[in-house]
Structures are given as structure tokens and as C-alpha cells.
Length: 200
Image 1 (cartoon, rainbow, N blue to C red):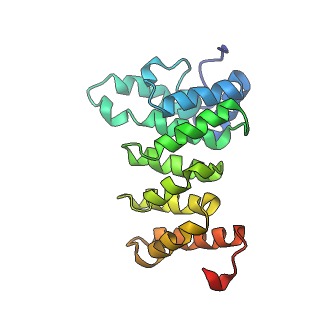
Image 2: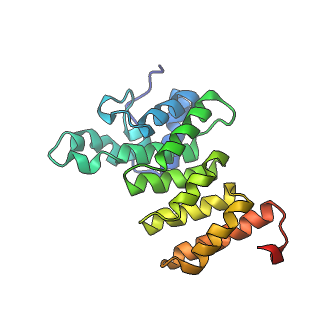
């Protein structure tokens, strides 16, 4: 395990800056494996690295919050940050990325909506095709932000068979942003599978 400093130079910077510094100090594989463990439910209190690497200033404060009387309210944040770090750190075709992809798929059913939302976004960004059917299931999630993220990512990894479900969402979802995301996703899928416009 690499020995890194106590956290990012500027914990108030954009998350991509913290993650880039962590990747330089820890190495891509170790950073991805650490985030995979956190996303899969590893106890953040036993984290081998400072949570500030992926959570900035809030990450530095999280361990103290977890040990306080309201700890359960903060427990999910390490999973959100771990998934978000995968937006900026990836190594396609490596065992570390394969493990991260599996953790992302599992996180699509996480109990907390923020984790599901972030995992859905990253599944699309990293084109984890195995997540398409799970994203389609999230189109029924109770949180509009999760449904919108799932629809958007289906545009990246969905196939012809998902067009009908997205059409239903476009017509009937009560949230305007979700309907718009579903409409864009249908167009993206149709373009990707080279489907004539009159067939979708």
C-alpha cells in the first residue's frame, strides 16, 4: 500500500483536483480499489487513506461525524464520494476497473438515493453496459434525480429494447427533468444503434 500525504493540498478545490492528486500519490489501481471497497460498504472509520482525498473538507470531517450521535445520517457519504471519484479516475481493461464496475452495479440498489444517483451517472460515463437493465429499473425510483440520472445513462449504455420503457417515461413521468432526460436518451440510443427516426 502506498504512503500518501494526509489529504489534498486544497480541500476546497473541485473534486477532480483532489482525485487527481490522490491518483498521483496512491496510483490509479490503489485509488480505484480503495473507492471500490468504500462503495461496496467498507467501514469508512477503518479507511486506509484520509477521506479528504475523495471528500475534500467534508471528507476530513466525516469520521468525527460518524462517531457522533447523528452518525447514521452521514454514513452514506463515503459511498457517494467513492462513486464520484470514479468519474475522474479509471483504468479501462484493468482488474481495478472491473472491480469498480461491479461495485457500481451493486450501488444502483443502495438504500440511499444519493448513492444510487451517483452510481447511475458513473455507469453511463464509464459505459458499463452490464448496468443497462438495472438503470431501466431505476426509471421507477421514487426520487426524480435518480430517475433522471438513470435515463441519461441509459442513453449511453441502453439498447433497442430499452426504447419502449424510455418512451413510457417520456410520456408519463411526473417530473419534467426526467421526461426530458428520457427523450434525450431515446435519441442517443437510436443514433448509436443507427435506428431510423421513424422507427422509434
